[in-house]
Length: 134
Image (cartoon, rainbow, N blue to C red; front, side, top):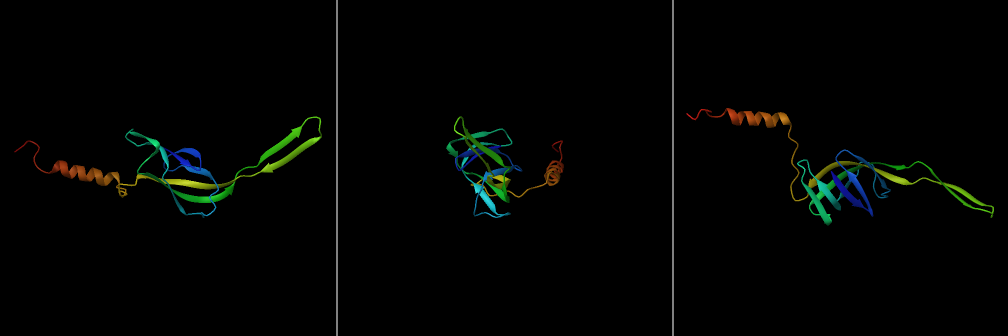
């Protein structure tokens, strides 16, 4: 789990989340993004890192899904006794982003190893040699 900061706002996310960010105009669908301003990081083992102000060497990779408009909100202004009423709508432009990976920038990316190959390698290590010490 990670908390990132992007353009003055903080977002709590994990791998696989879809995030609505204010529009990033120069990005198109399937473009890659990286967020390096990490405020808080917690790994699978339960170890936490809290930034001062940011955690170093942690990077979040994301992919742009699409550029969309949010649902319409109504802005209604009124002043009593002055016959003043204004009703306008607003649709915020957003960028949909999917979080792909969270990794340390100092480490090289480890290729994903399936559990079956790890179990096979453990079994081969256990079966080598005699267990009774002879």
